[in-house]
Image (cartoon, rainbow, N blue to C red):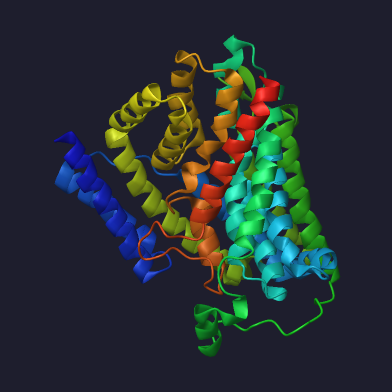
Length: 442
């Protein structure tokens, strides 16, 4: 009976996401809230956790990005990026995800992607590269980076679990970093052939014809950067650099007194503080009006993403919280029967819980109990990129909203979204190559 109930509720969750996708925009969040209401009224399930931290990070980042856009900072960054990719515009399909991977691994959080997302989109559009390709790859690479980051919460969990075996963080990184980089490159090779060229895409053509989007001029030179644009871009990049440095070197985080003890400010809160401060600095030094930030396209797309994330993640968390033990225990039992299923279990639990840390804490101890080589466990660990299996992550929703060409999308069947193929490629390739590397390391 419990399995039947989980199936019914799971189908309801997918159906409501599909309805939200049909109505587009923030509707996915609105119908997510309807799902929470139905869980409460029909199944007597308590509402799950609201992703407040992720919402606040999106709000702070898009506020700074919107201010930078108004000041001409996006034009400045696009001009700099175009200098690198003008001769080979398709290279953004490789450059963007690799850059995102490096930034997110350095900071220990996939949220850094939000800072890079508008630049990736604008450069793609200016060079008439289908934005779906670099955007989907980059958003997913930000999640893959968590297992290659020395400072991520999931890495802290992994290091703690493997410490008794004598397997150190450097041993883990020797496996996950090269395997992940190779997976991203292979992902670029595959995705560069996915979908029609931008100008042949029916949805793009419809939006241009309807006046919803103005296509970039052929071979148009980038706008000459203004002093204000340069200042705003440098301020924004300085904020990102500080966040990355604070992630790598915790001692850079401001120390505050909590219950009589000095502790560093939480990185999520530091991102919020830093990006809002960057927005304030842009207002003060670049001569824009703070009241105009809400009118910028980046801010508009970002706030739609906040509402969408609010509802759909709330609904998903409500479902998972009600059945977490059943889901995790069932997958754990499967892994015990076939050790190679550890990777599958990591992927599935990450998809269900939308948390790399939760999947790590739930499944890795099973592998240890089974006596698997720690190098083998480290090799299978990148499978937690499965958090992107379902389109319920904030960066997925934000990317879909940002891409005004319509090339990055969530399909009517929900599971057929733009991030599915990169997720599967990254999981299979990184785990496969990781297992080969682990033979040398282990």
